Image (cartoon, rainbow, N blue to C red; front, side):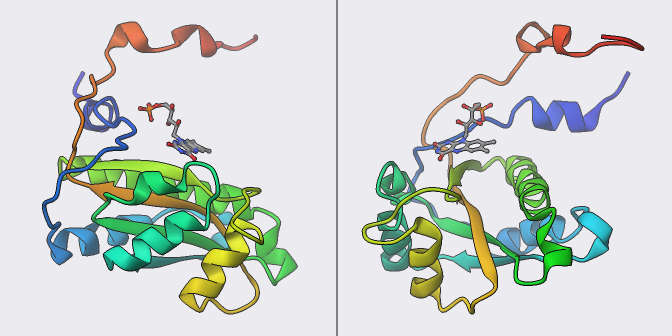
Length: 178
Ligand SMILES: Cc1cc2nc3c(=O)[nH]c(=O)nc-3n(C[C@H](O)[C@H](O)[C@H](O)COP(=O)(O)O)c2cc1C
């Protein structure tokens, strides 16, 4: 049976090395449109994004994560995924809301044959403060938001095999009872 989403999702792999090509602004725009369709708890739409394309700024953001942040240095674009956490009604599901939107972004990126990787920020440390605090200060994000993760995007600079049926953990799916 045709399964277009499976054909897309099996090709999506975490890409951590990037080519030097510039991604068309229009593609980034289309990717962000997909993110904005992601479901959120109670439809509050508390997820906001800073799309960073300036290479100096990308390096500075990477430095806000002590361990492993430099992996974003070669990326063309970094999307900073943050959630409005000031309001307790929006805060309850903030991780879920941010994570689902990020997954949408990862799939949307694959659709254009580009590479992407989730780079974790929550509970990670920067140079002096938490990664979240340092990134928000760098980007002028007002109080009341929390950064969950980054999505680094670029031309694929490494080859990774698409998943096949043999890779699927089909034993993780239980029918009717465990
Ligand atoms: C919640 C979460 C946190 C992750 N954090 C990082 C990270 O900080 N750095 C990184 O390189 N990859 C990170 N990843 C990517 C995973 O390592 C990757 O998805 C996993 O190894 C499976 O590989 P695949 O994405 O190619 O299927 C994260 C993924 C998720 C879902």
